[in-house]
Amino acid sequence: MADLGKVDREFFDEYVFPNLGADRDDVALGPTHGVDFGVLDVDGTAVAIATDPVSVLPDLGFERAGRFALDFVLADVAVSGLAPSHLAITFTLPPELDDESFAKLWRSIHAEATDLGVSVVTGHTARYADCSFPWVGGATALGVGDHDDLVRPDGARVGDDVVVTSGPGVEATGLLTSLFPDQFALDAATLADAQSRLDDAACVRDAMTAAAAGGVHAMHDATECGLFGAFVEVADGAGVRFDLSTGDVPILPGVRETTDALGIDMWKATTGGTLVLAVDPDYTADVVAALESEGTAVGVAGQVTAGSGVVVDGEKISHPDVDPSWAAYDRLARASAVEDDADG
Image (tube, rainbow, N blue to C red):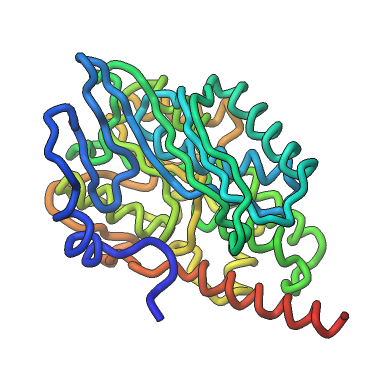
């Protein structure tokens, strides 16, 4: 069985990258492993574009699930430094989903999109046999603006500070404890802290706040393979070295306890909503202050230096390649299903 989650660089380089269709001059930035978005040049205007699956988790409640799904889709454009502005979305729904439940989901997406200034411009909605939650569609987001305002994913420069928001394991912690609370032997207060981390698994507003503060040379949403994966992707993309300390990265309540209970490494676990930024040191204080003013935990994890690779707490790390969150999700889902069968 192949590993769950995104394909690794070897798969991408062998099967995807050599086969990208027509070579067009208006593609300013095409597909690159570990890069969140592409860029089109349309008569001198930059259009950042990203596409992702639509993941809807009914156990969260359709209102909350809708916000989570939309923020996940918009994040990859937001880290370009251009505000997400347009959305095309497809739903391939399971036949058993009733109209009222879909209405709750869609109204939640509409409300969040309205608040973020995003317009839905096209889509496709249908029910099909053999479709099932959570993967019930796909979406493409766009951000339109000036090329000079783009934050390139490979833009980290020697001398930059490495700024990290929210810390490791945020998404994995919030998601798994919310979906499978009975599978965790945590006290009530710790479980509540862990479940509330799901509200931190959104970075669109943080990305816009950081970009507006100025001096951001690179920005990346630390999703699959967590912060260790994100550090390596940003450093390798720019051809630089990161020298970092985990002690300077925020760790939110409930994360360590949850990942310890699961037996997974919080630094390698998916943490959508966490940003890795390379920032001109003259602007670092402004970026940190702007994020903190919005209630976001943030730390300066280290610096960008000459060389290659990522050194964390004095040891060189490599890309995790496989995110342990997916195997943990599978174990929890199987255990929950067994308990449900027993109760039935």
